[in-house]
Length: 292
Ligand SMILES: [Fe+2]
Ligand SMILES: [Fe+2]
Image (cartoon, rainbow, N blue to C red; front, side, top):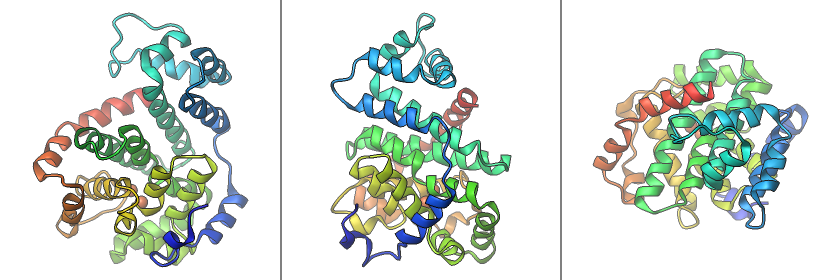
C-alpha cells in the first residue's frame, strides 16, 4: 500500500470509494491472469523462453496475435516467423512486455460499446505511450519500457469506470466539455473518486513497479511527488500534449494548456517535443492497423 503521506495531504484521493466500486463491478478480460503471469515471467531473470511459451500458449488468441505482431512491418523480420519460440526470441523480453500490455489495453477497450470513444481512448493511450517512451529514451530520465506502459495505462481507470457505469462516465465527459471543468473534479463530483484511484488500485493488484504506480496516481499532480519519480511528470506532459494534438476524449482549447513547468522540470526543449510529434500520427495509425 502506498505510504499515506503521499496520498492524504496533496490531492483529494478517495481510495475507499474507488475500491468499493471496483470490487463490486470488476470483470476484467478473461485472459488478464495469463497476461499478468506472462509479464511476471518476463520480468524474472530465471524464466526461460520455454516457460514463457508454455504460459502464452494457454491463450490461443494471444498466441496468434504475437505471431501476427512479430511478422508486422513494425518489427520487420527478414524471414517469416511461424513459431512462438521464434517470435519470443526475435522480439526479446522487453518488446514482448510492451506488446502484451498493448494487447491487454486493447482487449479492455473493446468492452466499451461506443466505438468512437473506444478509438479515441485507444489513440490517447498510444499517443501517451509513444511520446513518453521517446522522452524517456532520448533524455535518459526514466526507464523507456516503464514510460511506455505508464503512457498506455495512465487512464486505465477511465476504461473501468466507463465499462462499469457508462452513463455516469459520459456525464463526466459532458461536464468537462460544457463547463470546462477539470476532468478529475468532474469525476469526483459524479463518482466520488476519479480514474486515478482506480488506476492505482489496479497497479497495486498487478504488482507494477513503484514508478508506474506513481505515474497512474499522480499524472495530474506530478509536482507532489517530483522528488520520488520523474515518470508522473513525463505523463503529465504527454497528457497535456495529447489534448493539444487532439488525441483526447475531451474538447480543449490549446491556448489554455500550459506545459512549461513540466518542460523545465524535465529539462526538455520545445524543439525536442516538436520533433517527437512529427510522425506520431502515422505511428499510431500503423499500430492501430496491427492491433485492430
Ligand atoms: Fe488521467
Ligand atoms: Fe490521459
